Structure formats: C-alpha cells, structure tokens
Length: 470
Picture (cartoon, rainbow, N blue to C red):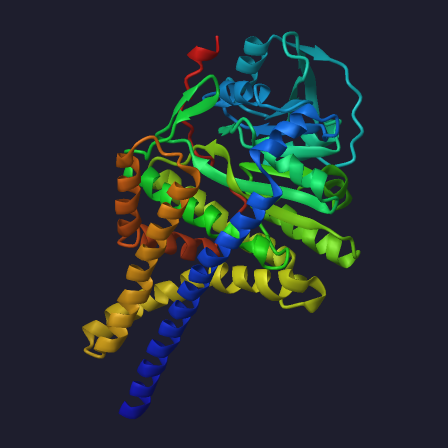
C-alpha cells in the first residue's frame, strides 16, 4: 500500500511539473515568434505607406460601430476621439443599447442629434430600434437607440445600419490612436484575402488625454491597474501577435478594437448572443472560411491601436475575468467540431487545442498543483526537487517572461513618458506571480463551473475629462 501511495505521489509530481514546463515553454516560444511577427509587419507597413494612403484615392471607407450601455462617463470623449482620427472617409455609429443612465441624453445634447426616419434592411437579428438620430454638426455621426439586448445584439444593429463594406468595432471606453485605422486598413488593401484585423490594446488608466488623444503614457499608481498593464503587454505583444506566424491561426481579436469584412460577418449571422462575442466571431469566421474553402487571412498588427479602461479594484476585476473565462468556454464548446480536426488546418490542430488545454483547463491543473504542494508539505511527502522545480517554473520563469515582455514593449514603442513608469512595471512584473496571478486562477477555476451563466457584470467606468474638447 505504501509503495502504491508513493507511486501516486511521484506520478502526481511528474505530471504537474511536465505540464508547467510545457506551458512555460510555449510562452517562451511565443515571445521568440513575436519578434518574427513584428519584423514581418515592419516590412508590410511604414509611416511612408501611411502617408501614401492619405494621398491616394484607393482606400476603403469604413464604419466604426460603438456599442454603448450605461457609458455616460466615457462616451462623449470616445466619440470626440473617433471623429478626429486620420482617415479619408468613415462614419461613426453609436448604438445605445437601452441604457438607463444619461448616455443617450448626453450624446443628443452634445452633438445636437435630431431624429430621422431611416429604412433598415434587417439582415442580422437584434432587438427593436426605438429611433435613429443624425448630428446637425457632424455629418458622419449616427446614433441608434434600441432596446437592451447585449453587446453582440448592439453590434448586429450597427452592422445592419452601416453603409460601408468594412466595419470597426470599438468599446465605448476606448480611445483610438490617430493612425490606427490607416495601419489596419492598409492590410486589407495589400492582401485581398484579409477578413479581420486586430492590434495591441494598451491601458488608459494612468494616462493623460487631450482632445481625445492620449498624450502621456504612464504606469498607473493603482497596483491592480498596474498588474493589468503587465498582462496586456504580455498577452498582446508576445501572445496574440505570435499567432500571425503560426499558419493563420489567430483565434481572438479584442472587443476593444477589431476590423472586419462586413459581407463575411453577415454570412455567418453576425455576432452570436454570448458574453465572449469577440473570440466567438473570429472562431466562427475561421470555421466558415475553412468549410467553404474561402482563401482568407486573420491578422493582429503588433503596434498599439487603442487605449482602454481596465477595472481599478479587485471586485470589478474578478467579475470581468470571470466573464472572460465563461465566454472562452462557451465559444470553444459552440465550435467544438474544430478541435483536433485537420479539416481546419492550424486552427484545428494547433490554436484550438492550445485554448482548450492551456487557457480553458489551465486553471484546473495549476490550482491542483498549488493545493498538492501544500498537502505534500503538510504530510511530509514534498520532495526538494519537486518544490524547487515548481518554484522555478511557475514563478521565477514567469517573472522573467514578464520582464522581457516589458523591455520589448519599451524598446519597440518608446511610449512611456518617464523612466519611473518603466521601473514600476518591471517591479510589478516580478510581483505579479506572488498572489495576483493565483487570485485570478481561482476566479477562472470557479468560472469554469459557471460557463452557462450569461450574466454580464458590467465594469464601472471612470470619467474622461472632455473640457478640452469644447
């Protein structure tokens, strides 16, 4: 009996260590491959090319769709930032999704909106529209007031009303970089197979803004916000951009900013009513194109495209990450036929398994590893080798990956206004693995059992000063 118990204990330790080695090795490879993606992009686009687009008659007009539910604190700044972007021809469609605060009233008053009668071809399903408004001062601003149906529902309404062949979805608390659309749309011009483009999203918290433009980028003083800075740098720079180099297998474009070919989105029925609508849409686009043998490309540009607000307290953060994990599981289950299916190429054989084993099931294995470590120590079965490897792989190696991501971000973009911000992020990069990461693991572990719950749990927004706009 004793020998069998020791066999189980040793097997457990080996399985946990192998999983952590595999996971951290994947993250390390991602960082290396991200350099390739960044290099490839630098060849595709340059400031010279961006200027040529402005001077060229060959461009693609675009519809910018902003779903808004109770966004009174940020919506005015968001609209001002959008209408002042550098782009030849675009429209901004704000969809008020049944807000019960002053979102609708503030937009109408600020931009002198008047109600009009506009026929709508309802290709995509959504809740009833109560009214459509246009601005007396801005010819390319449209306001849609509809019954509440959720973010996906609001986006579908915006797509139905939009008039251009490409649309951009952006969150109401996000501020675009002035050349974001130019950088992204250039990919549609150079590659006719391009159907979706995302980019690096950075954190607005801690930054100063002027006339809808982020002027000074600084690390937030709030420790919860600072930890999220680390996550965003690691997740976007050395995470999503890596999939560009792995056989067209990018499976998620952030809901904060994404550009899509409208005809294909309509072909698959638009956004599905799920709390993970951003990932779900991209996965379904992959599935549709693969099934119908449509040549296509999904790409994430490895440069900052917009700034978005993040939760500033633990309670709001836990709610957000719980929702993200539920959305991830729902999306994977909805398209489960892709899993290890060679018909879907690298998406089915590489990306989908990664999100299943590393992102969806990862919290299970890691939580079991931490709990096992504690129990083995209590009962005196914890081997020094296991404890050392577990500490080295799960914490120290993670700290080094965080640090390398921060330094790569700093060297590439030179965005931070002062050395203090860089130093703070490096410090937080080391501290993130000592409590913060484990807290989110527990939250994701719990969310796994709640994936059928459709509750949104909206995050409170901080007001963005718009006094300089007037």
